[in-house]
Length: 317
Length: 227
Image 1 (tube, each protein chain N blue to C red):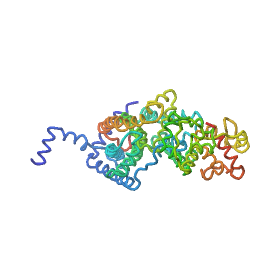
Image 2 (image 1 turned 45 degrees about the horizontal axis):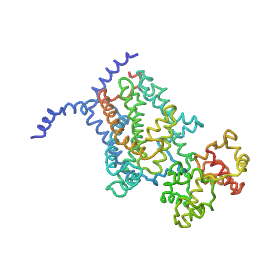
Image 3 (image 1 turned 90 degrees about the horizontal axis):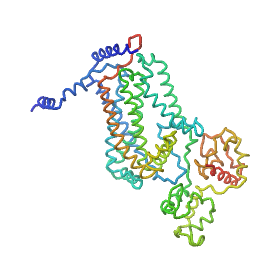
Image 4 (image 1 turned 60 degrees about the vertical axis):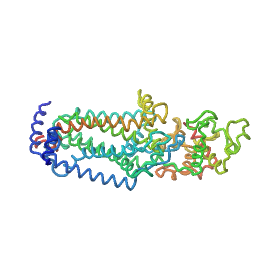
């Protein structure tokens, strides 16, 4: 098994003696490559800089993180593993890959070195590369799991106000905040827009004895805050909503095991998308995701019905 | 003193001539044609690593690792610090370059089977360096504390948290608590600028030593030509 080791050592020694000194032959090439890389990086740094998005907002549940490009293939690969399998695959796939890499010299141990003399490993390498390339491309093309959510500017303004007014000092939203006031994650759906508007204008008038201070907000600001809170809470849906789903959506979508499998499973969609997203998506998917083959329902369902459906779907989490 | 005398003085006290012989004057098997350029990938990775260390140190001089100040300090670097935007740009694009170069370097070794006898240990240390680069990229991503940083790290740590059996512990250790916050940030910062650089420097030293000690692998030849 190891008789070729001595032969290799002998052959390598001869090659080395017949070879060239590291300096200047290799050093020259290394320097040229380093200079080229420095030029490319300087150009990129000078012209594009490094982006900086808005300040991190832990209460923003609608942000869709897109993985760095070199992790894209992994996220795309995970889509092949449904449900709980995905969690296992997320750690097993990279783990297995690393294990194979580490053990590689002990699996492939013959004397053959030329790629054409190791057809299995060469094909495996090329296939893996092609697979990663294809997955990266598919992940780049597919907005399905990571559509860029166009946020309503009014909602955005409300979100900023929520932060600037330090509402989280007393209220919990998105699992974060103080406990002096009601937990907004729990009570948001209980009140309508009119109540919220009055509440922001004069809390005492609506609920005497409340610890909520009067904030002296402008009408525009109140409107923005209400829009923001609306975008978070799903609100109550009618008993008709599940029927609407069964009639219009279940041919393609599944909820808790019932329905078709042409479209994505929506059993937990509420934890990934907010109500506003779903309302817009149901009305006209092509605006949110050009690759979608789902028809728009703005002609078939009334706005009221779409709102009802969106509330129902965002309650699924 | 003449330059010659200076050189002799230094050699007698530091062994510089023997270091030069061992590193620079050593012979390497000849690689002809375009293949020879593949051998520059390792040193290119080393070069970008050095660039990351230098730009990283410059960034650390103006950066504050706390959720309250990180974002503003990064904006400060981009708008007020002399060449700050350029340096941060270099560090940002250098991170991608690291991943690309490490991958290409690894592919060169893979397709040439340079991991075979007697260079198995060099390969294993190399794979370790690859995971360290991934660690750098993961921990560095959070530091600007913008939306992208926060939510991408959220996804990453929750994936780590789903590992069978050890997942919950891993996520707790990574986050420094039950959820992401100031503790996560200082933790990632310490990993990014203290722990990972030290481990990487050690592994890098071992990797380079092994490369020089075994000699760089020769361009592979077909079997019938004797391999």
